[in-house]
Image (cartoon, rainbow, N blue to C red; front, side):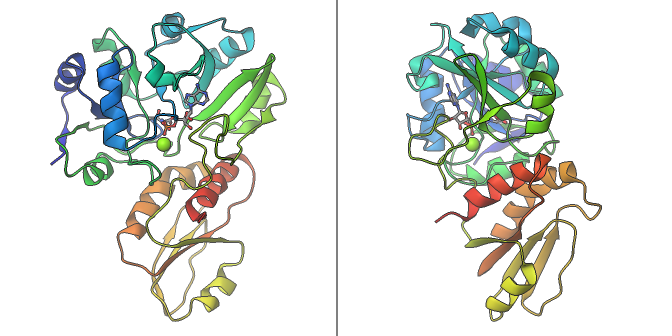
Length: 319
Ligand code: TXA
Ligand code: MG
């Protein structure tokens, strides 16, 4: 059984022995291991059942450590790092050879960020290596925003989960790379396109859905509940189509009434997109445990964090 622990000292001891530990970040929990240790990285891929073509994000404690793992860092990249770190922005940069091929899936780039979570930062302070960590969920499933989500996923392993409370942002980091000197968005995330464009100007958007996208984790089906999930702009009409079933509703601001609704998770009654984003995965986890016939999710306004939420809901509803 996975064990939830509050001791970052114990977590550091395990990581020093090439073991893996689930750690909190401000976005989602991560499955962390020594980024310089092939042995530790292999364990991450095994436990997560993640295909080896999908590279990991390396977590460092401050911008000062960036040179250990990346090189040829452009002025734009430094500006973004200084503006948004610690925080939910991942930069894809030219790698140093210190990083094992397993972490980068053989690419000549490495993804890196400084997490903005006191427990993660305190842990990184105790270690003399950075932490490679994908989200702490089995490949393709809903990302964990609470220690208990991780423990529930990995009941059959002896994984230690470091307790860090509920993740504040609740959606993964935004991923930015650089192609021919231009900044390119690979994954929508907790920092909005608008916020990034304020700092470095227009972004190229490449959040593609093909089998081998630029950020290989961006396969079209992802972040998915086990329950059939539908995304709609017209909740009332959709409710009529499923009128004889056990329905779970996931909506932005409004509560809906219908005899077959088992529960309606409202993500932000006041219309605050940041609040909605922070609650999204927890609501999906809850709905997915209710033995529903269908989850009907309402489409969000397509700007700012609403666009990120829609991206996750679209991937959750793909066949
Ligand atoms: O918020 C987050 O980013 C969380 C927390 C734990 O930090 N981590 C996370 O990791 O979401 P994961 O493994 O679920 O997603 C990592 C994404 C994948 O889509 C992967 O393809 C992309 O980062 N990635 C990693 N290295 C890359 C590289 N060199 N080039 C392009 N994309 C890369
Ligand atoms: Mg993930």
